[in-house]
Image 1: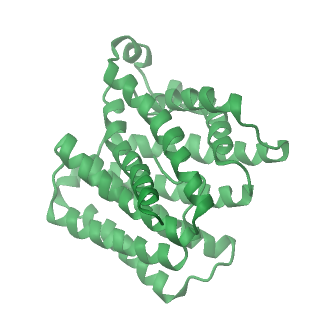
Image 2: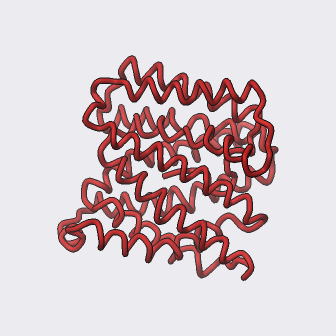
Length: 292
């Protein structure tokens, strides 16, 4: 990969890593599910007019929207509200071993002993992070993020079953189908949406714009050309830097603590994910890669 394309890939990873902090800023002003409703509404408006998908793919994308819109994102953002961005960015990486396990079950993909060790290391890393005393009152938030990561792994299987289709089209139409689900869930389980809108600041709206424009449109606009130019073995390892950018942004912008448990657990998790990606890079989705 050329130097310019390496920088391009790292810019994408930085945009995705910073998203954990930006999401925290949005959650400071809006309820979690309402945040995602607003984000997906903006994504749908910006993408749908320009990208169409074959009619026979729509029902699969609609099912995908249920997994992401009604299960993954509600759990991810509810969990993120109660935990620091640095920890969340590391814990979310278990989507990779979860995806690998599901690939073995659904697609009969042979795991192998090396990937088995990678999975064990990744889960051990999360266990080390979970055992940290400071997370005692936030353990349920961490469990929500882990459950959301499993849901994202299920979504990764669904994405593979959708087959060849433009990535922007998948993101846009999935957002359109997920919008009403998130709005209904927000109205049923949350309160204060109108007050949040009335009292919102430019920071809250800029955060939502970042999640919709920078994370979904700009980042994927830079990422998809790289996927078309280079092999998966060359592009997928860059995903390992997402939690690095996530932890760094959490520490620098929000003052998240870097503890021994977080450092050791993070190294185990990223190391385990690195083994899995190296052995079977396609266990990580190429179409919708960022779990937040």
